[in-house]
Length: 125
Image 1 (tube, helix red, strand yellow):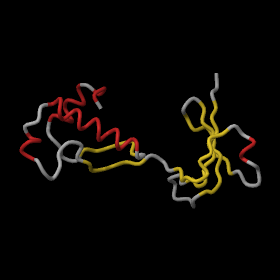
Image 2 (tube, one colour):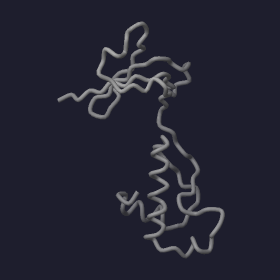
Image 3 (cartoon, rainbow, N blue to C red):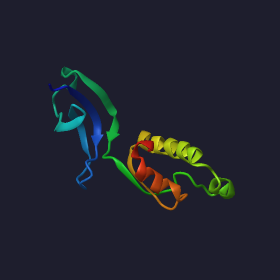
Image 4 (cartoon, rainbow, N blue to C red):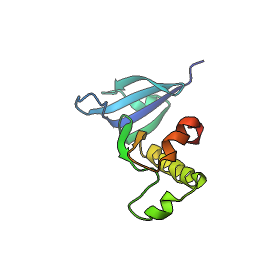
């Protein structure tokens, strides 16, 4: 069963290097974008849609160097932190990344347990 949602965006950056597209109707079915259509002279209000005409839609972003736990201060405290504390901070930072359009993060040199524990239990992230 198809569950379609239409979203009207004011500007679309598609990530290909093409110019910004204006007034685009995005069709989403079952959580996936299935079509992008310039509205042109059509009245987008004829569709049952989410009106985001004031926004710019971007492809997901990638943060190629983040520190999900360690910071520039409190280093000694952070090096001694138990995994439960580290996990809580990492989860919060990952949620913040996702909330701001960052879909992928490369941790660039954090506390050693983060990558190994996450590999063992991906559900923690």
